[in-house]
Length: 85
Image (cartoon, rainbow, N blue to C red; front, side):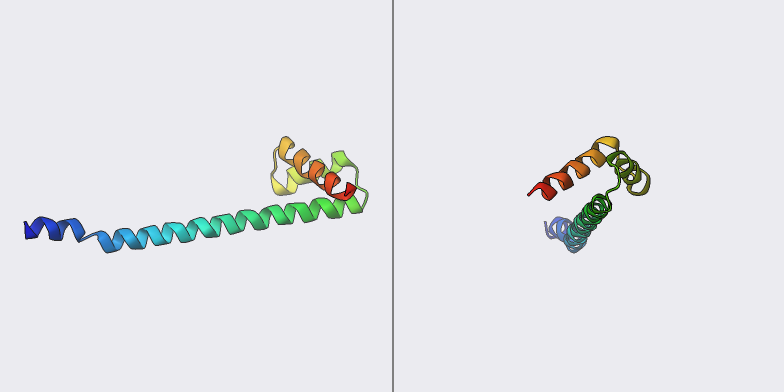
């Protein structure tokens, strides 16, 4: 009985450490994603302020941020709504 109990808890420390690492990586991934979104929003705001045509902004977002057409359009629409307020 003692042997099986020892076997059952022998990897417990590794499991806890692995879970902590996974949680930390998830937080880092989320932070990187949020920074990427902020960067895109700033780029769109700058391009709008520079009075660049919408089609050109969308094209640049696709080229430099590797966004799909729908994503680029959504960022541009969001910026337009922000400007209206």
